[in-house]
Image (cartoon, rainbow over the protein chains, first blue to last red):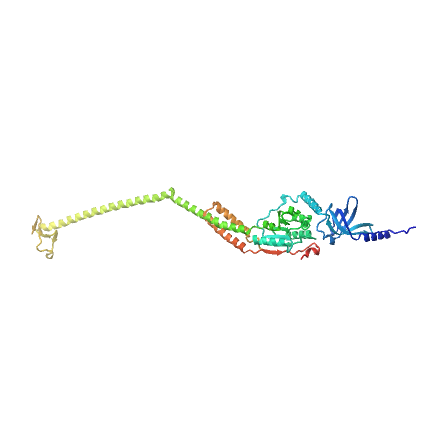
Amino acid sequence: MNHILSVSELTSSIKNTLEENFGDINLIGEISNFKAHVSGHWYFTLKDSSAQISATMWKGVNSLVFFTPQDGMKVIVRGKITVYPPRGNYQLDVRSMKPAGEGELQAAFEKLKRKLSDEGLFDVKHKKTISKFSNKIGIVTGIGTAALKDMISVAERRFPLAELVIAPARVQGEGSAEQIVASLKMLNNQNDIDLIIIARGGGSLEDLWPFNEEIVARAVFDSRIPVISGVGHEVDFTITDFVADLRAPTPTAAMELATPDKRDIFAFINEFFYYSSNNLTDKINKEKKEIAQILNSYGFKSPQDNVRNKSQFLDNLVFRIQNSVDKKITYDKNRLNLIKGALQSNNIDKILKKGFVLVKQKGNFVTRESNFIKDESFILKFFDNEIIIK
Amino acid sequence: MTKKKTQTFEDDLQRLQEISDLLEKGEIGLEDSINLYEEGIKLSKICYSKLENAELKITELKKQFENGFPDSLSTEE
């Protein structure tokens, strides 16, 4: 009779056989039932058309995989077969994984794109407007990268009033998607960031892969701060580009979209100096003209004419008054003289009547001897007549 | 930062644009125009010198992973 094995003995023997013979194998297969557990471990099945095998990939090693596996994706894995005696099953312990071909990534890209598009993550109605002036610009990119240097120099050239807040993240390789997500969240937790640029320079599809990861796409979508993406070169499109509020073809272009150009602002200020001075001069000239027009208008002229008329009337009046006063004075003067003469003659007549005689020389009466001019003819005036003595 | 209280560059520039438009329309009186012009010149000078003398500020956020991200993610350089 054959030796009778216990279950443990058999299992142990299977375990040794399998683990010895399949301790380091390469396997190609399609992923299905993929589950990323909260513990960080991955559980999935690898299959082809007629067989399947359970597989695990532990947290420490799966972080080295640059992409997140999806069901249906064909991958090449490397690992070993392990047997778990309490359950009596075997599985593949995967240490590394890569896509079976570039086409696999492309297919994964298309699949995620379709899924997120169906969910509405790319809809225009979700796009936030990018303000023309962003004072604080958050940047999610790799520290010390060319992309970051380019963005800094663009900001310096165009709008040095801005402040750049850099939230570093690995932008390729292990854990980069998680780091990008963490940096996006960190910037969203700041209270004064106006805009976020998520950027990376050019690279292969594999290099740019973090930007095609679902968690990155969702973090960009969830960002309350507007996001500009600038990943790769002009021709590269990533899922992040589709979700971002604005897509720039390169990191440099992203910063150009994020900042106003200093030269434009200076030009605007100069224009203000020029045009506004002109406008004001025009205005002043217009007002001047208006004032001149008002002064010449009938309304303004008639009071002036009125004043002139009145003053002429007044002049007339004064003239007439003066005239009549002058006349009166002359008239009175004449009368006075007449009276004076009459009075005088009346006086003289009385004396002459008594018999006195007056001597008159050159029209004047000579009342003193000293006034008499010798050898000059004179008149003797009697009461009744005069005699000329030569 | 007491940024909210002070007039920002953008506010100044926006006001300048407003003044420019108002002066261009020419619908306001001369006295107001002159006042606006003076305000505009003042703002222009402020904006000009702010931008002319600005130096780009760069700060770097240090990561604090509150929810226990693995150390391998936070150490990078």
